Length: 296
Image 1 (cartoon, one colour):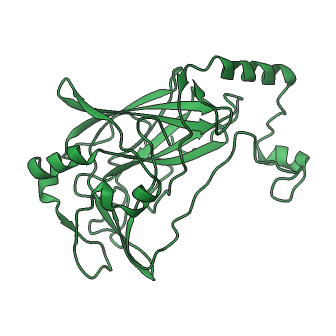
Image 2: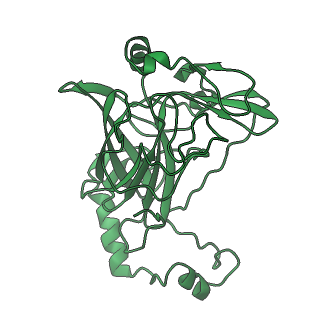
């Protein structure tokens, strides 16, 4: 959850309910529990983790003091389903639309570090990798084959990108408002119909968080009523589905409701839609650990 834009995951499923719980969480306390990591000893674990040295008392005291000087309030963001379309080598860039038609969106994301899940205050996580991906206005992802969606976009990278947070834990992307989408699910489920959302992965050292950001229904209703190409995107299907499906709003998205998600606040600033989201994650701060992200 986040205070003004709680990312979560959502899907409207037709047919049997299917588990989409492909979640990952590497807690800030570290992955070594009870002296082992995946059945290996501590010395071997140090090699697996790239030779990272144990934190010293001096480093821990400095780290703990940083929590006491936290600069803003945030709430821990819930882990969300990654979905089938993530690609872990997105371009390093702020402008991700690549000319795709749609309502221009300026998306600002602040990443806050938390000492514990119940901590009320956050310190800015500088140096975090924030990776986003989304559909275009017609509900189509880049770098997805024709067996999963009606348009083969293999090798393309539109509406994907990552940035590194500044000293305030902030990044900003220039994108467009995504469309809603339909996904063909493996049996016994049939289809997952999704409301408009933007996927986010945050990597900070060995900490990883996956989330989704949503939009207010009134804004989306206005776009789909008045603005192209959203106005034309009223029905959709995917390979293997028996028919076309109608647009899904937030209040019909099953997992959006189950996670009690809250859409981001969006306003027009100098004529441009501007959204702000704050993501809180458990983190031990900057300890010189290499990120798990493999993008360039």
